[in-house]
Each structure stands twice: as structure tokens, then as C-alpha cells.
Image (cartoon, rainbow, N blue to C red; front, side, top):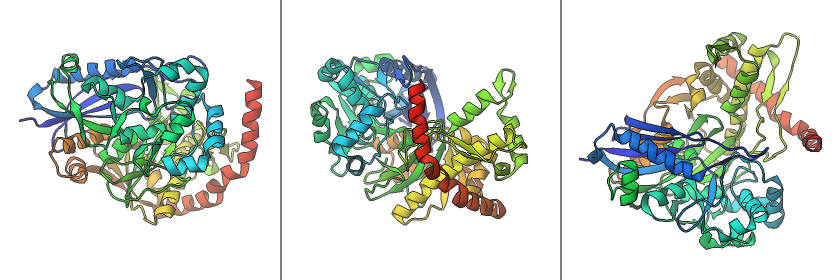
Length: 505
């Protein structure tokens, strides 16, 4: 009897495939790395063909360790906002433009003038940001009009892989929404926005809801992967929504908190609501939405610290040394406060000219205080977003399920609990994002009657961290008296600095 589902996570850096059993236990895995291309400043691209090459190679690697008859279905999660124009055979006509590409600031401003940023946010759930695909598609229209005009489809990662697996040009609503072109109140492409930039609605994939069976594996895909032809392919979702599901977060009073390269997180909501504090995405379960905050500079900021200031052991950054030193420093980093806008800011300010800040420097401050200030600043920023979400929904978040690379740090988990003033609990697997795809796949092949029941059966939590009263009181004052007013107080000056920097470059 088929007792496994495959979760495919095609991220920015790698394609990873995990076989999950009915209890959410990982049985086998395969992996293939991906490369980014940076042809010029602000550009971030990949060979879209690499998505399929990496995915098929990772599946084939996994299938060497399990019996083919055990696999019941497959479901995909993926890097969001990344896309590529393709022809009728799903052959890329231009490099994939990725989520962290920042070439389209002028186009973003133009979209605001044409359609109104507030109206776009209300309709699509997404505030103005070069992260989403819309402005980058307009850049392609303006800079490579022949490619844009002749593209058979604009493909998100999910749609691209689904076509290679099934032959169908179909994607999930919870993947397509990253284009910023889905009218979320009507669950359909916003045709006026598409035609408004000179494209045709038929240049975008058909959509289905996450958890629906899109199609079956073709004989060609079976030969490439080692999977059986006819295997059900279940509609998946973006990696943030998958992480939320893989963390077991299916209710309004819990939120996921992903301390990854970018920091994302938020709770599930049953009503479609929008606010500058978050972006509104389709959730994994029918009739749900994810209210999600995004900080583009998360673990990327600690990577910056280790690259420029960290010591190394055997050629690797000695993260543990700074963790221990930061613990000795104590809450408040001896008066050093950091605003982590190393990669600008999305919610709530949506300011692409924003930059990081460190205030409070004195003679006694060193690398240890700076390292702790990085971890505290990221938690302060997450609190800012979560307070905005709770003010909108009226629901108190009682627990945060933390995952991602930063969740391996006991210190960071404790700082998060103290800053947020709530329980912070580790997800039981570091592969929570992939597990989210596995959960949706398990529902799609009929193992569970609902997505929520699949999540309940297949997820668990590990250690919990409770707020320390003394640290919480200190962080409350730092947040309200210093952190919250800090960026708004200098935002105008930072915008001027950004313009001056552009003139100097």
C-alpha cells in the first residue's frame, strides 16, 4: 500500500524532496543545489530549466532509497515571486527573474501612478514592493517587448514544475498570488491589470485551489524521476504558506515565525482583510488566508555580521562564540539598538529606500553587543508587524511556532519570547516548509478529510520558551520608547540619503 507522499521544495538555493509518512515523519530525501545569476547590480536571476533539472535529480536520488509502490502522490512548495516567460513547450525565453531582484523600482512607482498602490493592495493583498512579480513583468514589457509579447505563458515556479510533471499549464492560487496579479476577492486573474500593461490574460496559467489534484505524472516525467506514471500531482503553495502549514498553524491565535534568510510569519485568518502591516495570501486550507509579514533581511543580516565581523574556526564563521558572548551581554545589548532594514523594508512602511540603522554607539560597545542587537532588532521588527496584524483582526496571538535556521539558537528563541511577550515553541522538524507540501499532498490523495486534520496528525512541536518578566519589561520600554518611533523619525533623511547614494554610484 502507498504510505508516503513526496514534498518538493524548490527554493532559491536548492531543490529538496522529502518522503513523508502519515505521521509526518521524514523517511527519505534527495537534494540538488541551484545557482543564482547576478548579471549586473540589482539583478537576481536563475536558469528556469534548473528548477526542473534540480527537482528531477532530487526526486531520482530519493527514489533510489524507497520502493516506488510506496508513493501515493506529490506536492510542490517553492520560492515565491520568481517567474520566467516560456514558449508553448514550456521552454524559457529569458532567465527567471527572482524574488530578491530589485531592478524594477521605476516600474513600481509607475504602477502606483497608473493603478494606485492602495487599490492594488486592497485587490491583490500585496503592498508596493519590488519583491512581487508585477513590477518586474512591467520591466520585461518595457525592456524586452518582443519576449513579453511572444511569451506563451509567464510561469511561477510551481506552474513551471507542474507542467513538466503533468503537461498541464496549471498552477495553484496559493502560488499564482505571488505575481501580485490575482484579484483575491474573486479568486481570479485581475484581467484589467494584465491588459493595463499590454499583456493578455491567456498568457497566465489556469488556476486551481491548493490541495486539488491537478493531474497525473506523464510517462516522460516518470522516466526522468523514477516515479510511476499516473501518480497524482497535488496543487501546492508558496514556501511561506507551506511553512505555516508545516508548523501546524491553522488557527487565528497561533502564528508561524520563520527565522530564515528572510524573516516571515503570521497567523491564519478566515476573512480576506488587508492592512499595511502585512500582506494577505491564500492559505493551505480551503477558505483561509495567511496574514504574513516579510523582512527581507533576516538570517541574511547575521550572515552579513559574520562575514564582516565574525571570527572563524576551521574556515567557518564561529556563530556559537558570538551566541555565548551575546548571552553574557544581556537584554538590551548595553543600549545598542538595530533596525534591520539591510534589504529595505516591506510592511508596514513599504519603502525601498529604507536602510539599516544602528543607534546608541559608545566606546564600550563591540562585536558582542552588535551581534545581540541584530537578534533583538529582528525580533522588534517582527513584533511591530504582529501588533499590526492583531490590531486588524482583534485576535491575540498566544503562541509563535518558530522554525528556520535561526530557530536553532536557544538565545534567539528566548529573545523572541521576551520581545513578543508570548510563548515561542520550536517546530519539531527543520523541514517544516517541505512538510507543509507533504501535508497538502496527504490531504489531496485522500489520507485525511481536511487540511487541518492532516496538519494535526503530521505536525508536532519541540521545546517551548516562556517570557522572562524582567527582560519583557525592559524590551517593552525599548520597543515603545525607542524602536517604534526610530525609523519614522528619520525616514525622510534616509530617503534623501538614498537619492544621494544613487547619484554617487
